[in-house]
Image (cartoon, rainbow, N blue to C red):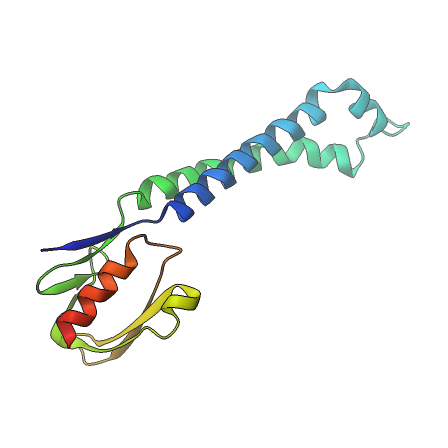
Length: 153
């Protein structure tokens, strides 16, 4: 039986909030920079040149919108990411499958207080690798940790 830990709601909601903030800020700066006549008059010099505030409000909207698009793309890429603890392997990503017999240590001293544990394992080339897994990135980690401890004990 495989136990899954999907991407956490904390991380998904955080990305959605960042996207929303970028879009709102871009709209606000764009309105002030291009459409708000009082703002434009206040931040235009006698020679007709825009001061730094007006220049920023004209340059920031495309950058903020671009950042929002990049964050949305990142959210689409990671939306199906999950940890899987099945009968033979601990699957961290599509490319990283850790057999239970290669796991050397699971440090769960900070799991209750800080919400993460560290899995130490040896890869195919014999190098020892530490993988920190946090509950800020994945939900259902307690069940995965119990399954891992049960498999390597």
